[in-house]
Image (cartoon, rainbow, N blue to C red):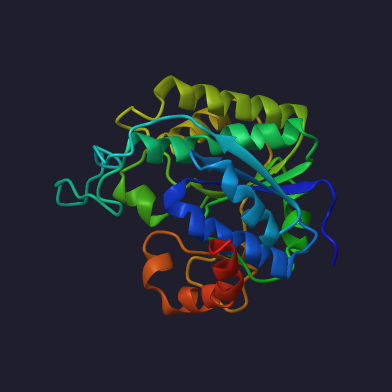
Amino acid sequence: MKELSNSIITVTADEKYLEHVKGLIYSLDQTNPWQKIHVCLIRISQSIDRDIKKLHKHTVIQHDDSIYDDRPNRPPDPRAVWADGKLHIPHPRLVSDKMCYCVQVKYSHISTCMRDGAQLVYAVDADTLFRKDITPLWEAIAQHDITIMDNITEDSIKYNRKRAGWKEGAIGVRKSPNIKKFFNRVESIINDYGPTHELGWVIEDRALSMAFSEMKIDRAHLDPTFKCEDLKKSSHIWSGCGKTKYKSSKYKKEVKKYETRLGNTNNG
């Protein structure tokens, strides 16, 4: 089924996640060939553009040459504690300023996509694989200002957050004057901290929660079929979050479907 012409997916990747985002793009091409996608590449040469567009012709590429220290230099969240009161560092063990920037910058990309005319935006992580027609996703996103997983999560407990539950790895947005104000506020809060701040890796949750407490938006829960972390066969979209993309045989098997084509682009 042809996708909605006013919808766009957005994703960000640096060199470390380039191969993952290639898999994402090609899986999108195989399952949703009409779907437009906005890809932001952090400090990656424009020489890669031709190969990426071979994977999916409806790809818009943005290059970001921002320079941040890529050396892991601090724990993801200095507040992370378990019930025993001791500090426990989850994966990744340490984060860098660059890693934090790659996470934070996606909110400006959501705003950019809306400014460029998209009525519906879906922001995803680079370790995402599309497996089915996503028309039902757009139908769900079109019903609310923001569609996001908001259940209490393992991370929320691990990081002892006061307001648990935003899973920021997948965000659906319906354009409106209200939602533009909302994301302007989210960006403002994130920028007050920035990638070098000790909370740079987890500031998304605070920014979303603060903005949500300040203004009324219509929020809905994203069905896990559109960000499936346990890789169910019935799901529309798989997420390789955490170590899944490296250790899960199911995830690796899915990626293998695209290896020949990806190999061709890697070889030029």
